[in-house]
Amino acid sequence: MPTSHPQRRVTRTFSNLTRHPPAPDDKPAAASPRPRAASRLGRLLCRRPPVTRPARTELDALPAKERQELWDAHRQRPFQTITTLLTSIGVLLSVAFTAYGLSYTAQTLSTAQEGQITDRYTKAVEQLASKAVDVRLGAIYALQRIANDSPRDRATIRNVLAAFVRNHDLCTPKPPPKQCSTKATENPNAVSNRVRLPADVHTALTIASALTIPEDSQSDFSQTRLPNADLARMDLTRVNLTGATLTGANLTRAKLTNVTLTRANLTRAKLTNVTLTRANLTRAKLTGATLTNVTLTRANLTGATLTGAKLPNADLTGAKLTGAPLTDATLTDAILTRAKLTGATLTGATLTDATLTDAILTRATLPGADLTGATLTRAKLTGATLTDATLPGATLPGADLTGATLTRAKLTDAKLPGATLTDAILTRATLPGADLTGAKLTGATLTDAILTRAKLTDAILTRADLTGAKLTGANLTGAKLTGANLTGADLTNVRGMTAGEIRKVAITDSATRF
Image 1: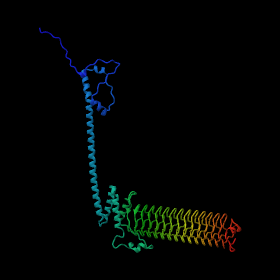
Image 2 (image 1 turned 180 degrees about the vertical axis):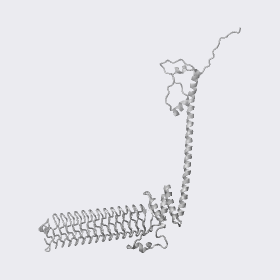
Image 3 (image 1 turned 60 degrees about the horizontal axis):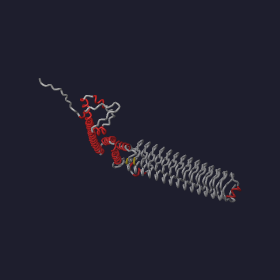
Image 4 (image 1 turned 90 degrees about the vertical axis):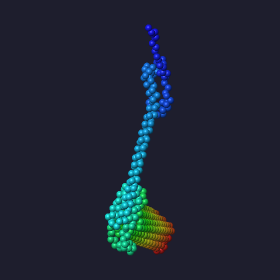
């Protein structure tokens, strides 16, 4: 019988799977050390929410196989994180590559579109030189379409169309028509036979003007010759018509806001109901022009010629008319509030019922002007010439007429309370019933003036020359007549001062009547 040996139990030892005696229940299991990779990458990349580690007793209760699996899974976690990171980077690179491809495609498309626009533009410009009107008209509309498709080319297309208008104006044909002759353009009495613009010129003018925006410079139509042209209701806002010939042109109801008409010739032009707000008309010729109901608010008309121009009901609020000739101009019911008319010539001008409140008329010339019923409140007429001017019923409260010449001026029932007439010349002026309450007439010359029934209450007439003046029935209450010359004056029935009081302060003689 073979010898029997006791059965031996083979046990394989795993240093990392050694069973430890169970820890007391009141002490937490010690945390197992984390691999170095997991420690670093886990904190850096895997910001996962904290998980409660299993207790030592729970781990010891597991079979060795499961504990090994748990250990292997724990070791593989950082590598899983790296794999996830690499996958994410790959996705990002794919997105970046796709975006680059789209950008390149868009750039290629943009380049193709630019090339197409260039081809269209070149063809349209070539067609503008065609002898056929229909072809030129189509080219103009093609350029308009290009301007809409390519905003950055608007200014270029606008300039091309403006040049087309300048080179195809009404005086371009050889020989030029009659209205283009110097005699016709300069004659203020010539008959204006309206002329319609050619279809292509009219369209180019309209489109070029429409392409002008506030941020851009003006459309350049300078030196364009359009005599007797029919431009009614056209929108020419912010266009440049410097030196343009528009004699006899019809601009009724046209929009000309911010337009430049410097040195433009508008003789006999019709500008009824036109808006010329802030327009520049410096040295423009408007002789015999019709500007009924025109709006010229803050317009610049410095040196402009308005001889014989018709401006009834015109609004010239804040307009500059410095040195402008307005001889025989009609400004009935016109509004000239705060207008600057320094040195302007208004000889024979009609300003009936016009409003000139706060207007500046320093050194203005108004001989023979008709200012019946005009309002000149606080107007500055220093050194102005109003010889033979008509101002019955005019309102001039607070007006400054220092040194003004009003010889033979007609001021019947005029209202001049608080007006300043220091050193003014009113020789033979007619002021019956005029209101001069509180007026300053120091040193004024009123020789042979008619002041019948005039109100001179509190008026200052110190050193005034009233030789031969007629003050019959005048009210002199509170008036200051110190040093006033009343030689030969008629003071019959004056009120407010007695003959003795007058003789005491004023200069009188035997010809002075009381």
